[in-house]
Amino acid sequence: MSLELVGFGALALLAINTWAIVSVLGSGRPAGAKAMWTALVLMLPVAGFLAWLMAGPREREYRL
Image (cartoon, rainbow, N blue to C red; front, side):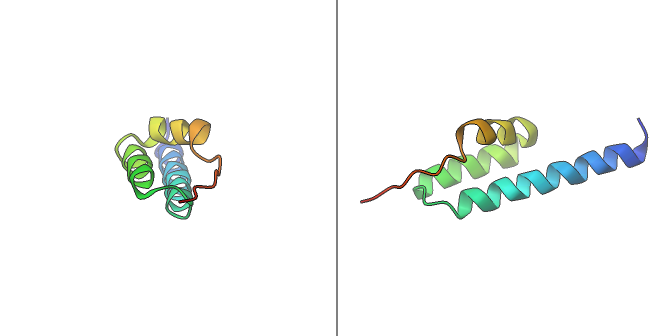
């Protein structure tokens, strides 16, 4: 694998993880859920993003 391809993959991973974190923080979810998803995406970049993509982005309204 060439260095350019690895660099592009790392840049793409950084971009999708940044998008995921911004989406989590801008959502209407409770603070605990935001912290959990953010920590998961930061600690496990690929698996955390895939888990968030499958389970996280569905916007549900939380009303108190």
